[in-house]
Structures are given as structure tokens and as C-alpha cells.
Image 1 (cartoon, one colour):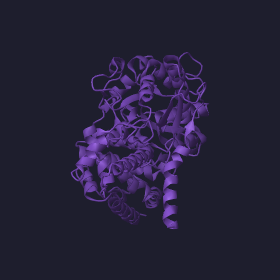
Image 2 (cartoon, rainbow, N blue to C red):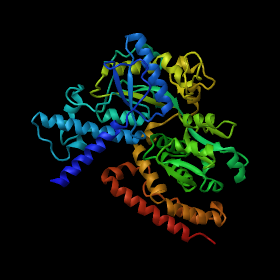
Image 3 (cartoon, rainbow, N blue to C red):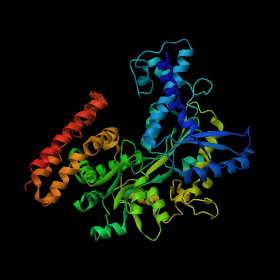
Image 4 (tube, rainbow, N blue to C red):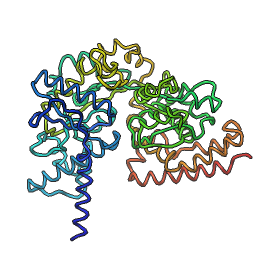
Length: 497
């Protein structure tokens, strides 16, 4: 009995912890009884502060009341997605049982599946309810992250359109295209708020120490042995932005190859050698530019705004950021309304504010300038055509240099994350050891036999998704990790010395 009680208390603490750690921003004139919004986001403190402050002021002017925002910070986008699933399944299960209905074994996974043949009634009922009085996650909005995670959240039934079909604000439809260069920027259930590219940040002083005369400008540059143990990388299974960056690397190679299968394998091999040069794999994508600016890593993979914000903070041109030309699409950071939002009306107003000219002006404006932020420069690129057109680097022009082909890798997104984990993280010690032996014995050009073994893959583009569907995730991750570890040891053994 005592043991069961301890388990229940521990579980309750885990569920409650993110809410105990909510981070309310400055509330200004907010008083008890004024609206409160709860927003889950991977966005940093600067973005939370500026949008929380500006929205409250905007809402007070238009509707007579300021708004307090409680920012829920549970980690990166991947952690947010997992947290939302657990909250919704728990809330729906409690509501379902309260209706006197049985909760069958295995129902949790099926409720949030894209489709199910096992429990269609549960699946449909979950998606038919959008009322906080019945069940709710107690969160209003999902703000930030990648299009993939927001689309998946909708497919799982976690988000709903903020407006009825065909009643979206005309200004939003006119100023934000639905798609551009293969990337989705707007759907009825997900709206892009700003845009991002992916690229390389590097420290000029550290490159000079390494004897690097030309800074990296292409993804493949980071596979050079000179960067051994010098590249900062985030774990793609924890960071949606870095998983997207790896997808860009793969797409670039697929575009260059004679056929998609060969390009997919070539892209993974580029990722593998970047992993072989990795100084670490961190859980947080924002850590990489911080370390590069401090000289703790010579270079790293970064989403543009993290790198630009850090370059501005470091000053003196110590750190630079480059988007490889033709090596990155322009993707959006969306916002979505969550099912059963406790304060739905104000949540929709927040979406409207973020997409207004006033809200968009916060992304790229300088502190103290008219329409800009008051404290932090956010270093983001707004998504609205009219606001983006006023910038030196127009994302609509940049998007023309890279066309994203979702049919190539969108369906492989999670498989690619897991492959990178098995290839570079779970077998990372063996990878770095083999790569170091190859470097010490003349490098890749002089060790073709070892490189051929090192870069073998357990699956191909054609069958990767099917393999992942047929087996439990932990099973195929274990098998892939064992495959890579064995291969890396064999590669080390066949090095010509």
C-alpha cells in the first residue's frame, strides 16, 4: 500500500513539475480576474519576454484588459510533443472512464495514432471534443518549433483550427503563403509566425588556431578531418531544429545524386562524418552557438536565429554564421491552438497578434525602434510578405535557392533521427575511435577500404520506413547500434598502417 502510494505521488509530481516551473513574464497592470494564457514553447527568454509584454499591451488597448502569460518550459520541441501526448491521453482517459466507459489495454497509443482499426470509437470521440469543461491539457497554445512537429500534433488530434474553414482572416491568407519552395507555411490548423534557415556557425579565432584558412561554407566542409572533436552538434532525437538541419543535408545530396536512394545514403554519410568530428551531442540546440562563440567548439550546426543572436551577444566579429547556398530550405516556426484550450478566445487573439504587422515587427526590429522590441533583439525573420519585404535579406528570395522535396524525406523524418542516433550517438565512441585511426594513417583518401566499411548502412531509402514499422523502436535501435559498432570496429581493423 505504502509503495503504491509512493509511486502515485511520484507520478503526480512528474506531471505537475512543468506547471510548478511555469515562467510568468512581467504582468504590468494585470490584476486578479484578468485573462491568463498558458503557452508551451521551446522559445527562449527573449522571445517570451517581448511577445508576452507586447501582447498584454495590445490586448489592453483593444479589449480593455492586460493578459498574463504563463510560459510552460518542458524542453525542446520533441520533449514538448511527448509531454502534450501524455497530458492529453491522461485527461481523455480520466474523462472517458468518468462516463462509465471501459479503458481497454493499448488504447493510449491508438487514441493519438493517425488512424486505428482497434478502437475507432475512442479515436473519433477524442477528436470530436474541443471543450475544456470535458477534458483539456490545461494549455492554450503550442508556440514555436518546426512544421513537422505541429503537423504531427494535428494528426494526433492535439490541435484544432483557430477559425472555421473558410473564415480565416483575409490579411493572414494574403500575407502568408500556404507553401513556398516545397515548405508548408500555413494550414487551417497551423500558422507560420516567422521563418528560419539552417547552417553553420564558426569561431574565427578557433579556425585560425586549427590552421583553417577558409571558413566552412558547405555542409560537407564539416567532414574535413581538421575538425576532429571540434564540431558542436545537438541530438536530433531531442532537437527538432537539428533534425531538420540533418534533413537539409540529406536533401542536398539527394538533389545532386542520379537517384534518390543513392543521394539518401550519401547524405547520411555526410551526417556520419560530421558526427565523427563532433565534440559532443547536446540536448539543447541553443548550446552550440554559445559554445562556438566562447571558443569551446570551432564550429557547429545551428538554426539561424540562435547563431545570429549569439554572434550579436559575443560581438567583435568573433563568431559568424552562414547558410550554405542551396543547402537549406526556408522553413517556418508555427503556432497552433490546442484542443480544449482553457481560454480559447484570448488564445485566438494571441495568434492574431503574432501574425499582425505589430506582432511581426518584434522579430527583426531593434530594441527601442518604433514597433520593435523594448529589451531584446530577437534576430528572427518575420513571415509576412509586407514585413519581410522591408528586410535586407528577404526570405521569399532566399527560398528560391532551395526547393524542399517532402516526398523524399518527410516520411523518413523519424527514421532518420533514429539512424543518426544509432550511427553517431549510441555507437559514438567506436565511430570516433575508427575515424581517428583513419585520420592518423593518411586520412580517408588513403584508406578507401576502411571508409567503405565505416560507411555501410543497415537500411536503404527504399526499406527504412518499413523496417521501422515492422519492429518495436527499441528493437531496431538496438539492432542498428550493434550493426554500426561492429562495422566501426571492422573499419578500424582494416586500416592500412
